[in-house]
Image 1 (cartoon, rainbow, N blue to C red):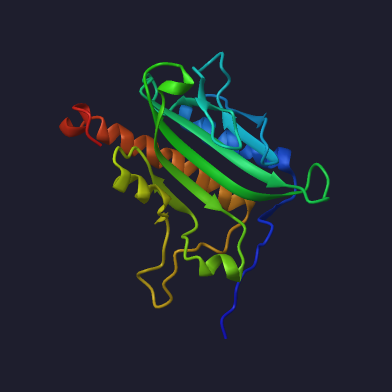
Image 2: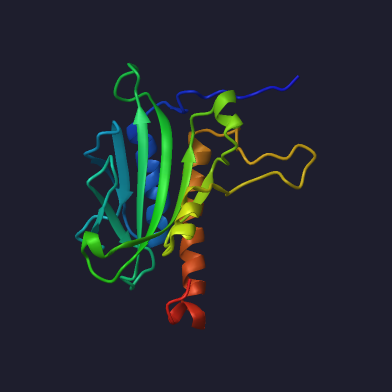
Amino acid sequence: MERYIDRPRGVDIADRAKFLKAIAASIGRLYGERTVPMQLESTMGDLWSVHAPARSTPVAAIEGDDFLDQLPAVPLIAGSRQFWLANTLRFNSLGRGVRAVFLEHMSFRVYRGEELTAISKELLVRGEWDLRLTKESRQKGHPQPHWHVHGATTHEAHAFVSLHYAMASTWHTREPTVVVEDINSERIVGWASEIVKHLMEQLRYACNEPDFQRGGL
Protein backbone atom coordinates (compact mmCIF):
# COMPACT_ATOMS: atom_id res chain seq x y z
CA MET A 1 0.00 0.00 0.00
CA GLU A 2 1.42 3.37 -1.01
CA ARG A 3 1.94 5.94 1.74
CA TYR A 4 1.91 9.67 1.08
CA ILE A 5 3.00 12.74 2.95
CA ASP A 6 0.12 15.17 2.50
CA ARG A 7 0.73 18.90 2.87
CA PRO A 8 -2.40 20.49 1.35
CA ARG A 9 -1.57 23.84 2.94
CA GLY A 10 2.20 23.76 2.52
CA VAL A 11 5.05 23.46 5.01
CA ASP A 12 4.36 24.39 8.62
CA ILE A 13 6.37 27.45 9.69
CA ALA A 14 6.18 28.06 13.44
CA ASP A 15 7.54 31.62 13.32
CA ARG A 16 7.44 33.46 9.98
CA ALA A 17 9.70 36.33 11.06
CA LYS A 18 12.37 33.95 12.35
CA PHE A 19 12.14 31.84 9.19
CA LEU A 20 12.47 34.87 6.89
CA LYS A 21 15.51 36.07 8.83
CA ALA A 22 17.10 32.65 8.40
CA ILE A 23 16.45 32.74 4.63
CA ALA A 24 17.87 36.27 4.44
CA ALA A 25 20.97 35.28 6.39
CA SER A 26 21.63 32.19 4.25
CA ILE A 27 21.42 34.19 1.00
CA GLY A 28 23.25 37.18 2.46
CA ARG A 29 26.30 35.04 3.22
CA LEU A 30 26.65 34.35 -0.50
CA TYR A 31 26.81 38.10 -1.17
CA GLY A 32 29.03 38.82 1.79
CA GLU A 33 26.53 41.34 3.11
CA ARG A 34 23.20 41.66 4.86
CA THR A 35 19.93 40.83 3.14
CA VAL A 36 16.48 41.64 4.47
CA PRO A 37 12.88 40.37 4.08
CA MET A 38 10.36 42.75 2.52
CA GLN A 39 6.60 42.28 2.17
CA LEU A 40 5.25 42.79 -1.36
CA GLU A 41 1.94 44.23 -2.47
CA SER A 42 0.17 41.36 -4.19
CA THR A 43 -3.31 40.07 -5.00
CA MET A 44 -2.08 36.55 -4.20
CA GLY A 45 -2.05 37.04 -0.44
CA ASP A 46 0.95 37.10 1.88
CA LEU A 47 3.92 37.52 -0.47
CA TRP A 48 7.51 38.32 0.61
CA SER A 49 10.91 38.80 -0.99
CA VAL A 50 14.44 38.62 0.41
CA HIS A 51 17.12 40.88 -1.03
CA ALA A 52 19.93 43.26 -0.18
CA PRO A 53 19.09 46.80 1.01
CA ALA A 54 19.24 49.33 -1.82
CA ARG A 55 21.93 51.37 -0.09
CA SER A 56 24.48 48.56 -0.41
CA THR A 57 23.46 46.79 -3.63
CA PRO A 58 21.59 48.10 -6.70
CA VAL A 59 17.94 47.04 -6.69
CA ALA A 60 16.03 46.88 -9.96
CA ALA A 61 12.25 47.04 -10.26
CA ILE A 62 11.26 44.06 -12.39
CA GLU A 63 7.87 43.95 -14.04
CA GLY A 64 5.73 41.40 -12.24
CA ASP A 65 2.98 39.22 -13.63
CA ASP A 66 -0.76 38.98 -13.19
CA PHE A 67 -0.53 39.01 -9.39
CA LEU A 68 2.43 41.34 -8.84
CA ASP A 69 3.14 44.76 -10.36
CA GLN A 70 6.83 45.00 -9.51
CA LEU A 71 9.41 42.65 -8.10
CA PRO A 72 12.72 43.76 -6.53
CA ALA A 73 15.84 42.16 -7.99
CA VAL A 74 19.56 42.42 -7.24
CA PRO A 75 22.64 41.59 -9.33
CA LEU A 76 23.24 37.84 -9.30
CA ILE A 77 26.97 38.22 -9.88
CA ALA A 78 28.95 40.75 -7.86
CA GLY A 79 30.19 43.65 -9.96
CA SER A 80 27.86 42.89 -12.88
CA ARG A 81 24.52 44.43 -13.79
CA GLN A 82 23.74 42.01 -16.59
CA PHE A 83 21.97 39.31 -14.57
CA TRP A 84 19.43 39.90 -11.83
CA LEU A 85 18.01 37.64 -9.13
CA ALA A 86 14.46 37.97 -7.79
CA ASN A 87 12.65 35.75 -5.34
CA THR A 88 9.23 35.36 -3.77
CA LEU A 89 7.89 33.40 -0.80
CA ARG A 90 4.12 32.99 -0.46
CA PHE A 91 2.56 32.23 2.92
CA ASN A 92 -0.95 31.43 4.13
CA SER A 93 -1.93 31.83 7.77
CA LEU A 94 -5.43 30.32 7.35
CA GLY A 95 -6.53 31.68 10.70
CA ARG A 96 -3.39 30.63 12.56
CA GLY A 97 -2.29 34.17 13.39
CA VAL A 98 0.73 36.27 12.51
CA ARG A 99 3.66 34.09 13.58
CA ALA A 100 2.56 30.56 12.71
CA VAL A 101 1.92 30.20 8.97
CA PHE A 102 2.17 27.75 6.09
CA LEU A 103 4.72 28.28 3.31
CA GLU A 104 2.90 27.51 0.06
CA HIS A 105 5.35 28.44 -2.67
CA MET A 106 8.90 29.69 -3.34
CA SER A 107 10.34 31.05 -6.56
CA PHE A 108 13.79 32.21 -7.68
CA ARG A 109 14.00 34.02 -11.03
CA VAL A 110 16.96 35.10 -13.14
CA TYR A 111 16.58 38.09 -15.49
CA ARG A 112 18.99 39.54 -18.04
CA GLY A 113 19.22 43.25 -18.81
CA GLU A 114 21.71 46.07 -18.42
CA GLU A 115 19.49 48.95 -17.39
CA LEU A 116 17.73 49.44 -14.07
CA THR A 117 14.30 49.58 -15.70
CA ALA A 118 11.54 47.04 -15.46
CA ILE A 119 10.76 46.77 -19.17
CA SER A 120 14.38 46.06 -20.15
CA LYS A 121 14.59 42.78 -18.24
CA GLU A 122 14.29 39.39 -19.94
CA LEU A 123 13.26 36.43 -17.78
CA LEU A 124 15.66 33.54 -18.41
CA VAL A 125 14.89 30.84 -15.86
CA ARG A 126 12.74 30.15 -12.81
CA GLY A 127 13.48 27.72 -9.99
CA GLU A 128 10.25 27.01 -8.10
CA TRP A 129 8.77 24.81 -5.43
CA ASP A 130 5.05 24.42 -4.80
CA LEU A 131 5.07 23.04 -1.27
CA ARG A 132 1.37 22.12 -1.18
CA LEU A 133 1.37 18.37 -1.61
CA THR A 134 -1.58 16.01 -2.03
CA LYS A 135 -2.28 12.79 -3.89
CA GLU A 136 -4.12 14.85 -6.51
CA SER A 137 -1.15 17.17 -7.05
CA ARG A 138 1.10 14.16 -7.63
CA GLN A 139 -1.20 12.95 -10.39
CA LYS A 140 -0.37 16.09 -12.39
CA GLY A 141 3.15 14.75 -12.71
CA HIS A 142 4.86 18.07 -11.94
CA PRO A 143 8.27 17.70 -10.28
CA GLN A 144 8.71 19.56 -7.01
CA PRO A 145 11.01 21.46 -6.91
CA HIS A 146 11.45 22.24 -10.62
CA TRP A 147 12.84 24.60 -13.27
CA HIS A 148 11.09 26.61 -15.96
CA VAL A 149 13.17 27.75 -18.94
CA HIS A 150 12.27 31.09 -20.54
CA GLY A 151 13.94 33.37 -23.07
CA ALA A 152 12.13 31.74 -26.00
CA THR A 153 11.77 33.73 -29.23
CA THR A 154 9.51 31.48 -31.33
CA HIS A 155 5.94 30.29 -30.86
CA GLU A 156 7.04 26.67 -30.63
CA ALA A 157 9.72 27.49 -28.07
CA HIS A 158 7.24 29.42 -25.94
CA ALA A 159 5.27 26.21 -25.49
CA PHE A 160 8.18 24.73 -23.56
CA VAL A 161 7.96 27.44 -20.90
CA SER A 162 5.09 25.54 -19.29
CA LEU A 163 7.21 22.41 -18.87
CA HIS A 164 8.40 21.54 -15.38
CA TYR A 165 12.01 20.29 -15.43
CA ALA A 166 12.92 18.24 -12.36
CA MET A 167 15.36 19.86 -9.95
CA ALA A 168 15.67 16.76 -7.77
CA SER A 169 14.87 13.11 -8.31
CA THR A 170 15.50 9.55 -7.18
CA TRP A 171 15.67 8.14 -10.69
CA HIS A 172 18.72 6.11 -9.66
CA THR A 173 16.77 4.12 -7.03
CA ARG A 174 14.13 1.39 -7.12
CA GLU A 175 11.48 3.93 -6.13
CA PRO A 176 12.00 6.75 -8.66
CA THR A 177 10.21 10.03 -8.02
CA VAL A 178 10.61 13.71 -8.89
CA VAL A 179 8.74 14.99 -5.82
CA VAL A 180 10.66 15.79 -2.64
CA GLU A 181 8.34 14.96 0.24
CA ASP A 182 10.44 14.93 3.40
CA ILE A 183 10.98 18.65 3.89
CA ASN A 184 10.82 21.12 6.79
CA SER A 185 11.63 24.78 7.42
CA GLU A 186 15.31 24.14 8.18
CA ARG A 187 15.83 22.19 4.95
CA ILE A 188 14.04 24.88 2.95
CA VAL A 189 16.53 27.45 4.24
CA GLY A 190 19.36 25.24 2.99
CA TRP A 191 17.66 24.74 -0.38
CA ALA A 192 17.22 28.50 -0.86
CA SER A 193 20.91 29.12 -0.22
CA GLU A 194 22.05 26.30 -2.48
CA ILE A 195 19.85 27.26 -5.44
CA VAL A 196 21.21 30.82 -5.38
CA LYS A 197 24.77 29.50 -5.06
CA HIS A 198 24.17 27.14 -7.98
CA LEU A 199 22.82 29.93 -10.19
CA MET A 200 25.79 32.13 -9.34
CA GLU A 201 28.27 29.37 -10.20
CA GLN A 202 26.57 28.45 -13.47
CA LEU A 203 26.35 32.03 -14.70
CA ARG A 204 30.00 32.70 -13.83
CA TYR A 205 30.88 29.63 -15.90
CA ALA A 206 28.58 30.60 -18.77
CA CYS A 207 29.93 34.15 -18.91
CA ASN A 208 33.34 32.71 -19.81
CA GLU A 209 31.96 30.68 -22.73
CA PRO A 210 32.50 32.24 -26.21
CA ASP A 211 28.98 31.37 -27.44
CA PHE A 212 27.41 32.99 -24.40
CA GLN A 213 29.51 36.14 -24.84
CA ARG A 214 28.26 36.42 -28.44
CA GLY A 215 24.66 36.36 -27.21
CA GLY A 216 23.96 32.65 -27.16
CA LEU A 217 22.47 30.87 -24.20
